[in-house]
Length: 217
Image 1 (cartoon, helix red, strand yellow):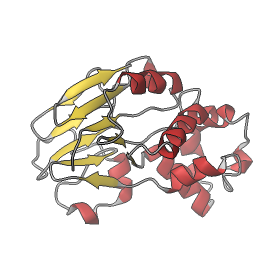
Image 2: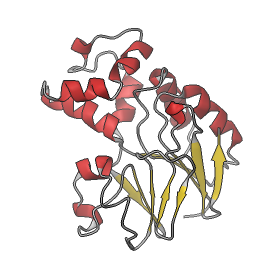
Image 3: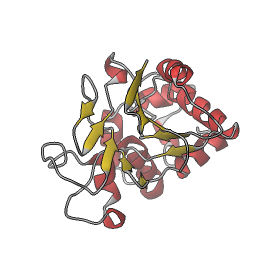
């Protein structure tokens, strides 16, 4: 790959912060890549505004790698299965704020996802479980150390915390992840965590690679 990689942590409906952060990135559309680590929806007030921005960037030809977060994973699982057991989990994740951002869509529309514009649905359907380069592995939550990357369970990739967070392991490449919020980016020899709790009043963070510069909004 030529050019830089800019990876953005959990957005969670913070459309205004996303807009400001994107305006601050020294992004070269001809050469650079934008990686999104998942969790675009829920908790925050403007999930629709977040997906509007990301779909517009994609339409403009930005090289974009959007990953699956646990919030998108559970929503799509509920859509696929209709399993009512998942509904309390979705509500606990702040799903109703997402529905409000789409004009007050009802819980009854979740099984069909009919409240989503076609381009938003296509965006969610395009999400990847992880993305790998020669130097980095990008994933929403983390990895299991004892499993090859291609064999990792998608629920782990989207939701794992321990022992990934507490054990300093070499995964062969540096892992760039979100999911677990930190007051400031986590930086270790083998991991970089860039969920800095934007939806909780903290900053939205991007890391620029390979220069290892952090950008905030």
